[in-house]
Image (tube, rainbow, N blue to C red):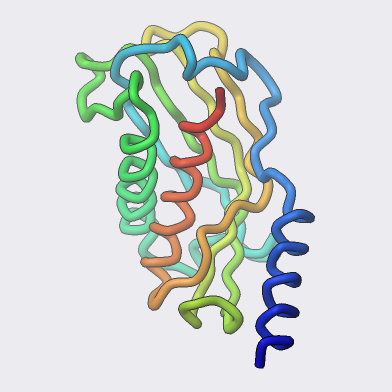
Length: 173
């Protein structure tokens, strides 16, 4: 039993070592969150997104507005916890920045190897932060296959994925 446990631990360590960072800064200042302060409005868009790159996302999920709300709540939860200086606000009047997440592709699979066996959502897209009054982007991040692990439901998997995205974006420093 000890050998099996040791092998499993080594496999997990190996998998973690080979896992790349799904976020790549492609524009603006990577250290944006180190100096930025104030409120930010968050917009998440699934417009034009595909499911597995093969069909429109609306063919897989008919409730895209609900998925946007779940994604929004997931992002805000971990982002607000990890980012001390920039907070998500509801009104543009309170905001200094606009965070736009444009999802281009979503994939779903069933994970049976984790603590919770169930659906897992992967997301690709772009996150852009601009001044609320417009102008050039302050930060542009390419999102390449981020997932939050498996959950007991598809909605829970969407929330977990955006929890992970919010946490990782807040850690960009």
